[in-house]
Length: 193
Image 1: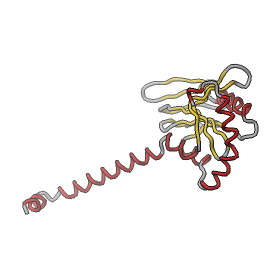
Image 2: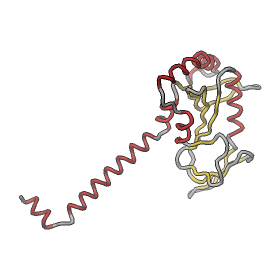
Image 3: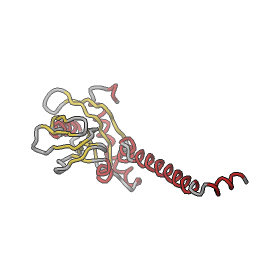
Image 4: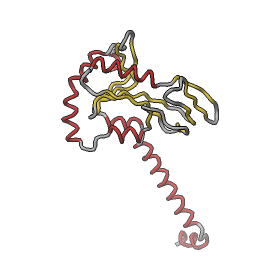
């Protein structure tokens, strides 16, 4: 009975407890939503196999490193991941892209030409399979002047490469499997597989 007396003496305590519970539920929801949208989750959602840190011969000469090569129902997807925080100024014809955030301003080379080279290198190995490439900017990057070609975020990636019909996906993937094995055999750095 003393607990009920305490609540009667402090009528503001019950609403405060309710707000606290709601805040905890909201925070848990945010953590789970972020986890669902994470890179690993999205990659698992859209791909049926993947190779990280793949090194293959370049289309002309030398070697080329691929962050992620994914086997999807649409063919092979080369994924270059950029984890930048701030406003990104970049365009298809710009040599350097700029990131501005609260702490600093910096530039990096336009990633599109390198992605085109990676696509060409993979196509040289698997000529009969569609090969796509995307530059994935994680949460925290904002393009205020328009989004350059081949650039996407996690939501766009899953919308473009996700396959809702998993049964149909199995048939598509089986058709690509022999070509996927060619990529594995063509890899120069087998320790990355």
